Image (cartoon, helix red, strand yellow):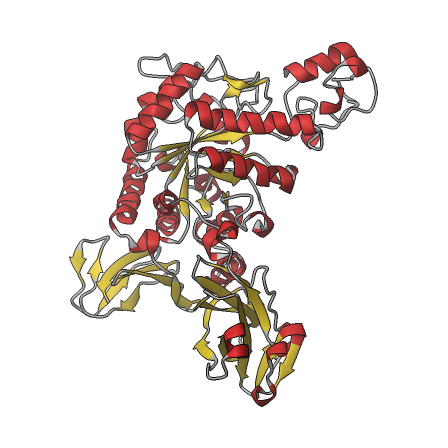
Length: 574
């Protein structure tokens, strides 16, 4: 047994509360090293004062592998002051117990002080997400290039690539006019990149945090959009850019005019007076871009100002959440206070963030509710789009997330194929329609929140800043088959609760056959999903009573034939 690879981090990522009555216990071991793991646990104080109570035990399931480690997991009842527990590890050559302080021992030697301990579950510390996020499908809109509005002149709309000064003229009225279209995609959450006053088309150079940009419309029009969306059962998220302002922001303009005499001097991180806004600049700026002077996020006045901005849009416009730009530029204390204040006004409001890497520190229930899942994007692109990964490597890439993230976080990550910051998936996949369709079906059947960047459903391409070009409203440009596929995938997810509420297990990973498959189970129903990324047709054996959801018929032969670059989605009663 490879004892050096046995890892358990108690009361961090490997033992945590799932809800008020249950806890998750995890263990990590070298991949392929352990044949089985048994969790032994007890109510510590009941054991100490009532000798008759025996230890409980359960087999731990191998829930993921990442190429280096296997991850084992159990969910146990926890309604006491302290749960004590240890592990029985079984490998091919030995059976040994593992407990606190990295101790290995024979079971006959076990004492309470050799056990790990998990304290009582505190309700206020739980990571609880609003119920609506389970069935969420997010549609991301870049307002300037989404739609100008019914009857508007669209001359020059499709030009690109574009820089930040090139305004296409999309409006909030355009979003209102397309609510039917957005809803037809199965989307029930609209996330818009910044809409506040800013000289750029992307609005990340904030001039006024409290006003809708005049090119997009007015605060009144935004209020109308939120109201109309809510009337359809849809929700609206805004983009918060709180690490920096734009050059035209009132506080920075005051600093330029008054220098050190400005009451806002300490709002920014300026080296000397006067302020130099041309290169070489003498103030700290996000990405060293002169247009984005960094806010001093350690200044209490700045913190109070930004918190007021977040509260204002929730309180006055009833938005349903924020997506925070480069959230790792904000302090943990700020994020905790933002969450507390937002939830005090609207408990089912969410805060998501832009993070491109391991987001575990932010996803413990005290800061963020979710993040844009770029590791998912990379794995899905490399597997379906670029065909660089084998099914095993794909499984390992996804397993890295599944084995480490808290369950509450992992099942609600925003799973995107494209965004306004990266090359569109369809371009990266060399406009391979079959690969795109497989990726979409995976996105809508795998645990997490499907996240659609507007235009992907139309087959839009886009390298560099072309990913922000005007949407293809001209049907002659659109890939209508891909659009229909998105609608089908969303309907499939909507009509099968196992795809939104079900558990998850990989059931087929075969490099030789080019097959990857998983199952989702919920309320007596199982959905099996298989992907054939190989070059040859493959037979998938199935139990009786299985219905092929993509082909709309029951499978009677005991198997289904899956062609190269094809997907099967199958349902059966358990």
